[in-house]
Figure 1 (cartoon, rainbow, N blue to C red):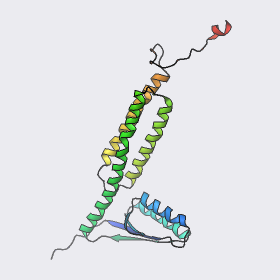
Figure 2 (figure 1 turned 120 degrees about the vertical axis):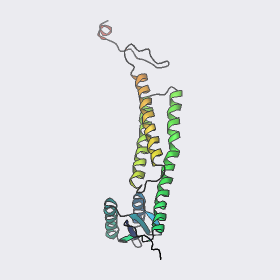
Figure 3 (figure 1 turned 90 degrees about the vertical axis):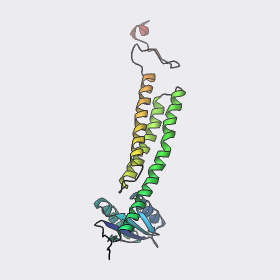
Figure 4 (figure 1 turned 180 degrees about the vertical axis):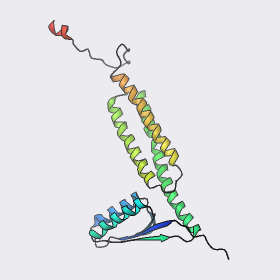
Amino acid sequence: MTQTRTSERSWLLITVSTAGAPPALRVQVWRRLRALGALYLQQSVCLLPDRPEVTRAVRRLLDRVHHDGGQGRLLKVALTDSVEEHAVIEDFRRERGVEYADLLERIPEFLAELDRERARGRTTYAEVEESEADLHRYQSWLAKIAARDYFDAPGAADAQAAVERCAADLAAFEEDALAAEAPEPNRPPVPGQRHLRIADANDLDA
């Protein structure tokens, strides 16, 4: 009789109940577990890989739950059926893959906006600042997904490359803005760009 291979990987099984606790606690618990990339098996029961940083984060969360009047438990378990464990891992990868895809879906609009501003002749520092804020959001978004991508989900490399392209395109846009707003001496002015003449000492004495 063939026996199913037992995995050496361990998991964290987390149960949380916020009944009787402040309503805001339920939202806080849900947000924190989703931020960690928890896979929900059913309502109030979820699974995470057993890793030191994850375990610490979950224990801190459960301390908060208990302090605020909720209930929670953390159990370390093993999935003895390798087929079932593989299915669980694929579920983790699928959820992160969807998140990478969501990020990738936003990237073309960022690049298109820079192209539109160039076409309008609006390569200005104000536009650089606005686009830089968007870029930081993409970088933060990618970092959060990557932190909970425990099993190398599809789309990670594409998302990283896309965000890096945004950074490179914004850097080029900033160079254009610098050339337009602070041109080098003796460089012909950019068409349509206004330049102010600053009076020198001889003008003031006149």
